[in-house]
Image (cartoon, rainbow over all chains, first blue to last red; front, side, top):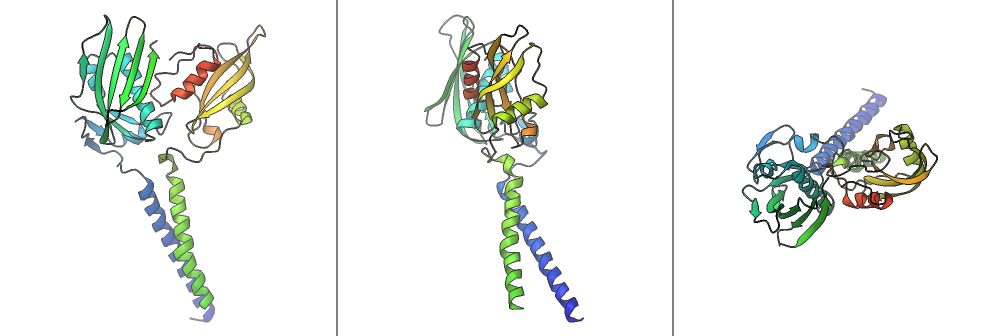
Length: 173
Length: 144
């Protein structure tokens, strides 16, 4: 092998080593920055006890690719919460998790058996509370007070030290 | 030969790892809540509305200009649009846009122009600050 050929071999070896090094660090970076969720695996949610598809956490978003994914909130309907009421509550929880907790693509789980309905203070008013967790922990309590007479509902969220972290009153249409 | 070894070592152990890590970081930016997106400009918002064919709507309103706009939580924009109706009367109406991919071309126009856009409960994370801003522009004529 003459000197020139040897030089080219050295160049190619260095380029190959650089490419391999770059690829290794690329995949290490992707693994480091990608949240620990496998696509398309059915798992049981630890807080709600319901099954969910892990891929759905990233794939179910038509418009906002960062919006959190809700698991187990069907339980509210089973406790008699109307779909409209539930939609407002879920929207408030999503807003809180995304912008106050700054947790994109989070899994928000209804905490099993946490629903508690209080006796109505006024006729045609509904007051209930329940808990949700963020990414299998960080449990919060939601208190909902709604009144069908004036079509108002107030959603209040408390963190795990019982500090109020979110409150908003909605007019229901 | 010594120079070759030094350059090779720098390439393999410094340049490639930095480039690889950086590319991985860029490729996973969608998982971060505050990617460094370039804010949309007033002209970009006008262009988006023109491209998305929102200059004429079912409400027969025609956009004259973007009077002002505000950005919320990186991705969301509320613009106050100066519009005219068929009679030529001018009013200011809100519109909501979302830019998730740092790309004006993929910006979503979330609401129609005109009174009573129904934006909540959206379930897609429209920030309440943006809704309050829309209500302010629309004079309270906003469904929530």
